[in-house]
Length: 305
Image 1 (cartoon, rainbow, N blue to C red):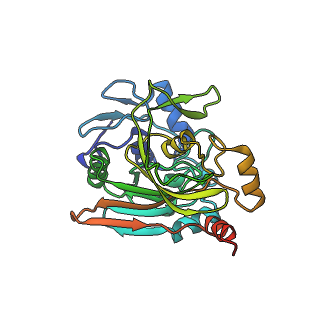
Image 2: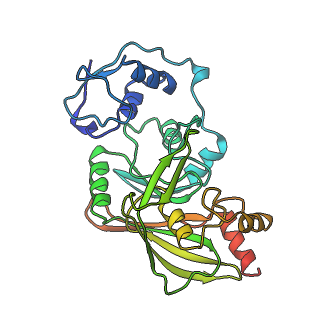
């Protein structure tokens, strides 16, 4: 039996267990949870349960993975993550997440950003995602190194004091008169497990502000500022406005995407360009992430360079 200490209050149970049971395969942990082998306060719980200080967690003996079973971070991701540190203090990292890397493993993925970081930095006792980015979206993402920092940033997110800015390349000419899209969003999960979001009056309120950065012949570079934080919000709101994002395989324009692909754009053009938040010392902090080479080179081509 393990009692949850105050410093881990609010952490997801699966992440708490991964720290307590280092070396146990993740699939084995989830199987133990599904079967009820692991219990909290004598009751069954799901992997996303947030543990609280004083919780009693019953953990049965589980086989530790052999050395060759332990995952190794692919060299490409390791290099990009090591080079992608944008900001660091005693309780927080801000990284420039590469496109193509999910924020966490699951749904057929063996690893994600948070698993990579835990393997790359085993000396860190606590690493948790503060928020999420879609797998194909690049840019600023916050990783808490202390439970108190995670709680504070989650409060800032709830209070809408974290300022997120994205760069997106959209199909067509975005009108300078359209400064925002406000439309409720409803999330659906298909039988395949794929998540699809659509505008629906039964959905949750959502608002995104937009401004034009640069115009090209058949597309527009815009800055998007999500006021709310719904799944796929920028992508669906851009589609709703009649200007889907280039490279968006869920909500995009197939013909426009094929033309862009022929010109060298192989990914979704959506980048979390900056984050504004209050750091642990109470000071306003703004962190910016540069575009990766593929997106920057595509803009150069559009400019005729």
